[in-house]
Amino acid sequence: MLMHNVQAFLDFFARAPLEVLADAADILVVAVIIYRLLLIVRGTRALQIGAGLAFVFVVYEAAKRFGLLTLYSLLDGLLASSVLIAVVIFQSEIRRALMRFGARTWWISGSSAKASGAIEEVIKSATLLAQKRIGALMVFERDAMLDEFVQRGTMLDAVATKELLYGLFIPSFENPLHDGAVIIRDGRVWQAGAFLPLTTNPELDRSLGARHRAALGISEETDAVVVVVSEERGAISLVFNGNVVRDVDAASLRDALPGLLFRRVRKKKKSAGRSSVSPATRTSAAARPEPSVAQPKPVRDPAAPAPQIEETDP
Image 1 (cartoon, rainbow, N blue to C red):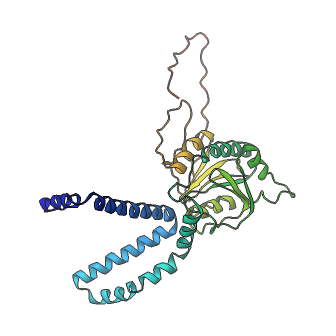
Image 2: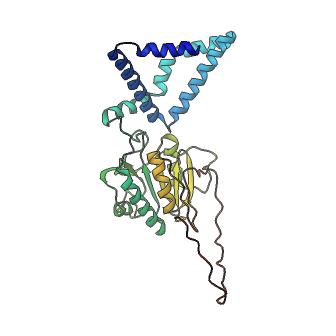
Image 3: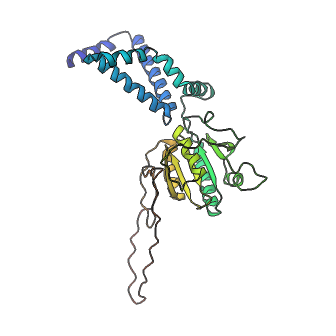
């Protein structure tokens, strides 16, 4: 078998160079298209539905192989209309995929380098809003476009700055945008005052308010990453893939957001006297972290010799 495979591999290249290049280009184009389609459905419920259909097909083949006639007949009639079923189930994803292919340069990732500047502005504005106990909801769009999932707000297409983000969430009767969400697309504030779908998770922690429920709802439907500022607690939360990490600080956001948006594996940074939350520290939406208790500082005897301080890499 091994020799046969080796011979088939050699025969593939033992042809005219143009034929080999044509076949290689054909394989490469199909691989790129499949990869981009997987990125579009990545993080959405379409991927879960697709996995369910694949499981049904595996059961169908097993019933056919082992002679389970009743199960085979049932699944055979179902899979006979599989193309129509797939079109009905994935109509939103198909429409969104075609729109993405026409609207953007499809071989470039939706998380561009322009988002790096917006990350820092979001962190600064979230920190300031948390200090003032002003609620906020800031959504980073990734591969799945959010047009089909949000109730459109006011279109801005503005540069993401700390001053703009802070001003959009100031509660005022004359500021109707403060109740909605800010959506950041390609590093720019795409729209403000948008409303997100609420999560339907029945096991959700009751202490989570409407902003956290909206953030979880959009993260369950898409691969968006959301920064939430709680008005009641003055705390920042990070929501992604149906998970919520609560009580994060600016340093934790700087560690987590680039890894989530750019899909880079970042090295853990050692820090003296500070604990950071990385993307791997995923807390379930139903989980509630215990509050940390500040330890009292030890009192040093003035007559005692000064302790030696060991320098560590920050």
